[in-house]
Length: 541
Figure 1 (tube, rainbow, N blue to C red):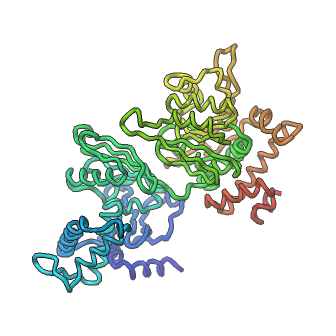
Figure 2 (figure 1 turned 180 degrees about the horizontal axis):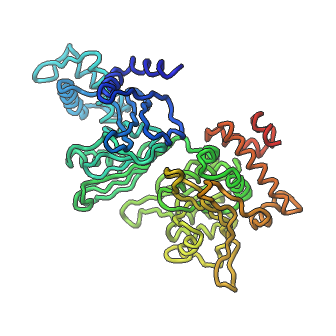
Figure 3 (figure 1 turned 90 degrees about the horizontal axis):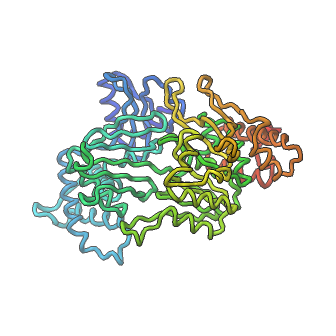
């Protein structure tokens, strides 16, 4: 179906979309383009002006502010007139009055209860209100139902942002317009804001209740997981947050970004990904390092499918951000009860991992004493994957050796390699790039330090990754080659080259679905080239 037909179909179901587009055309003299899906190369548009759907009746308009030339994000929702808003308020009053009378043992579905009470409230046959029964038109009925469900069961005025699959983070600071990190258009200002401090505080109380971590003056900071897995951080009260209560939501994505998608993005090369594939297939311990917002967890999730599918995975996190496609996955979360006796820490869970006989241990982030336990796990034969805040191999070693982690410097070679990722400017646009891969060779008594070797580096001038470790990789030659029974250690580089060709061919064929890529990786391990799609197989022979 062509774009014009898609737009007309969307407008036929959502009249408010047509009204919005007509108003925009009258004011600016241009018509936004309608796209069912966005593509990554749209980020290079100089003056984007496009609308995309995130689920009826919500649409998103990405456009360029004519005065500031900055990109703006406008959520398009149906609007309530003053009369319809008055009806909605009266209906909500009735619902709130009747909820205490509901027998929740018999009626367990909250959505069904609210819709039943809504239908009672608008029934023309009964008079529940002092001024008589309330009447709504068919259009008003659907409109009011949308707002009632949005504001009670869903996320209120943030609902458009929570439904948008292209959003990474949502940032609210007091009464300023909400900003967000868009996967394609980066940091943008939205048309959504709170009208008063009281409205914002009430909204945060509602969010706190929904996640089971009530917020108040006495408990102003919460860090919790939302029902969809998104990570919520709230700083409540002007006494703590000077510009008013604030919050950040790090959105959960149902399907992670695949390693082939990262190759297409340029985050890492096919050769880097192939190196990681060989490492994780052969029980190497890796740290995914970088600074805040560098994309560490995204890349970590993308490479987890390289771990053999029959492996038992034991993961430890404070908030659930890991995606593990393996059938045997023991997913562990810390617990903070506010009382020391009931707390379950990362340290506690990692100690338990040593008794759980996992194949791989994955730690959401190492930043404290649990790091020493992670190295004990490596010492006892359990490979470890983790993210770690460090911008260079030198800083990584300093943090690991220092307090509060305190890993003895002599044990550093238990970690086989570290991948470093950063935000860098590419053609004036901020992009995420793996900037180096460093192997940890071991402790040198002569230099009283840890010897490392750079295997991959990043050339910012060319926006390319270089393989510096050809015929010089200790991990490939001394640890991985023997596992494949390769007599000449240098023959392992041919294996790396073939894996790189496979991944590049998958990316070129636009095979980027996380589930599909995971399936191909698993099938390839069992069946070899026969498991590859025909067009990919032809390129790697």
